[in-house]
Image (cartoon, rainbow, N blue to C red):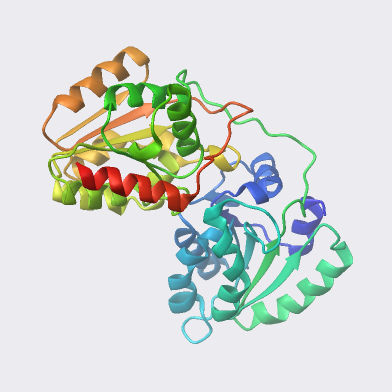
Length: 373
């Protein structure tokens, strides 16, 4: 189904969401049509953020907003849906557009398997009426479903379109780029070189995939790394939990800008606790690159000032490899909580693979190593 036709049928003029690879045609169309325009399209920090933002739009206009997201974001919308949007509270109508990763019977990565199994059930539990769009879904069928949805929305209810892999398309290509020169994979290679045998906890997406392949290419064990293949935005909290439990072991967190934005409160908790053995590296390309490259707001904010405001004793920004190497060595030798923001380009190798070991194997090896230190 052409995404242009789908949105024509829905008839909304305000969209907010967190980008998803399965909804890339939708995201590209919105960027092509609106860009980032607060009147029509806002990429938010997390899915709960989107839902509340959509509620504000409805309160101000009386119109129906659309929230788009990957199904992994359903957990983030439960609270605002149940305690804000629900008919028993404020009865605020909203249309959710959800990419269905991990659909039963369709091969996917481990972090999507269980989420895919409970996707529809979670919507049912939240009293969100849903319809699945597949490759064979016709325009007429969606029009008929939307007619039913309008009756639900008019009563303050919520509805969802769950989009299967390859179900929507958009012919135009959108190029996402920035002016930064350092490639993320090379940045991680420099981190690995300096960190030595220190444990690393890496964020979800391509960063963890690159870290895994760097270890393989180096002939190194994967026991040093915990690859946070899901749970976007929580790697720094995992690292905090490890750091305070192993105060004599230096812990590195390799984070991403989209992940940091998703649960930025974690930085305040880290800063308040000030673990002297935690090094927080935020690789910032200003994009949700793993799911397509759509922009984050991280290119417009000062993460160094934010980190210092949260209580990080040392925080610095680098944009070239000479400064990166100097700062990596400097923080390794410091005995205090540190943050390095690394400005990098958008892009990765076309042949970038995925971890060849299971998530359980990764956890077990990492636990044995961490507990031996």
